[in-house]
Length: 55
Image 1 (cartoon, helix red, strand yellow):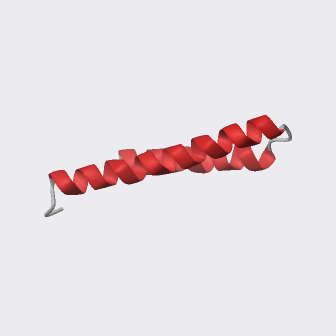
Image 2 (spheres, rainbow, N blue to C red):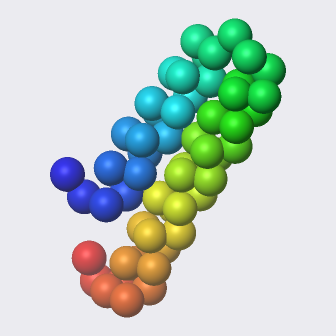
């Protein structure tokens, strides 16, 4: 599993926890975590493309 795939899997888990959480603060926290991890995955992919454009 690549680093972006791992980050996206973690984001999906956070989204699942967000959807199952009954506490509003926890829902908001896991929503922010899911979004942050998704953005990190995109940044890692972008950095890899910029470093190795032929791949």
